[in-house]
Amino acid sequence: MSNELAPQISQNVSPRAGGLDISELRIWFDTPAGPLRAVDNVSLSVRDGEIVALVGESGSGKSVTALAALKLISTPPGRFVSGSVSLNGQDILAMSEHDLESIRGTSAAMLFQNPRGSLDPSFTIEEAFLETLSLHRPEMKKAERLRYIEQGLRQVGFNDWQRIAASYPHQLSGGMCQRVSLAITFACHPSLLIADEPTTALDVGIQAKVLFLLRQLNQEHRLPILLITHDFGVVRAIAHRVVVMYAGHVQEEGDVEEVLASPQHPYTQALIRSVPDNVRDDESLYQIPGTPPNLVDPPKGCRFADRCDHVVDRCRNELPELETLSETRAVRCHLVGPEKGDA
Ligand SMILES: Nc1ncnc2c1ncn2[C@@H]1O[C@H](COP(=O)(O)OP(=O)(O)O)[C@@H](O)[C@H]1O
Ligand SMILES: [Mg+2]
Image 1 (cartoon, helix red, strand yellow):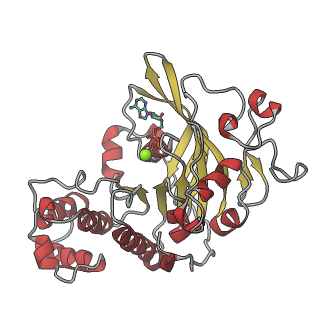
Image 2 (cartoon, protein in one colour):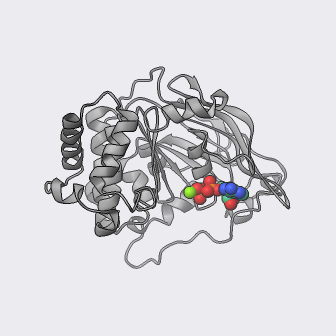
Image 3 (cartoon, protein in one colour):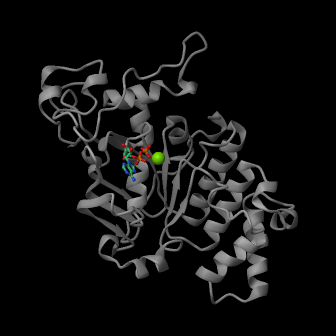
């Protein structure tokens, strides 16, 4: 990640009734071997004006958590076992598919890792834009929609917006497609943006540009964003708050600056050490040894125990609670806490 995006963001975020609240959510997938506990008692919230990063290695349960925010899990094989999801005060899990269709894209919009996948290859960008606007902004007149397209494409940095509008997705690069997707998504005035690894498939230079745009939308419009990433460099670049997830559990959460300055959970420490920017030239990039546990038969203790440098017997036998350390900080580790000293 480029350091030009180092955090300069105000931390003054005032809570309001809106935003996203996920509480004690459990989502399992039925597999031939038994239920796979993808998301296991996860709580997280995103408030007005806030960028919250959900970070963790592949398979941690980040995408499943994000999809649950709009009840986009296929059931079966998925199963909402317990917990709740509230979006702008609405109980998402109790809503009918018909009602959900009307809020997807407006109450919360999603931006995915593969920008081409979310753009229809048979539509020009203008056609795709018009289609989305007619669905979500039916009150708009044609001339107004065209102005909107210009404004939207300019906002994501396309001064030659007419050329982009007339193009098909295959005529644009991945980064350009992602910026277009962002413009189309944002044009529907979502009250929350969920971006699932939006920069992972892009070159480093383009990554920085897309992250910059996300931060700009957040700052100018107080757009709350749930940003999913496996990369602490991305967290450092734009997020206010971070939730660290591993094997279906939240392991640590807190304000980004605080977590970066003193990560408490050994998993968070390892993730931070594996970011290229944190490695001096003479060190090779740290890789967390081992692999995540099987979530069909998870360990009874801490799910990170097998890969942890600080493991003690208790870690293998007893699941640590997610313990609150301060108003914004919580950690799930037997070795961390007010009386236990640092791990
Ligand atoms: N449709 C599905 N059927 C079975 N298992 C699934 C399904 N979707 C996700 N999973 C499993 O749920 C776990 C979490 O997946 P995911 O949320 O995609 O991880 P992440 O986004 O953190 O990489 C993984 O073990 C994954 O294999
Ligand atoms: Mg994912």
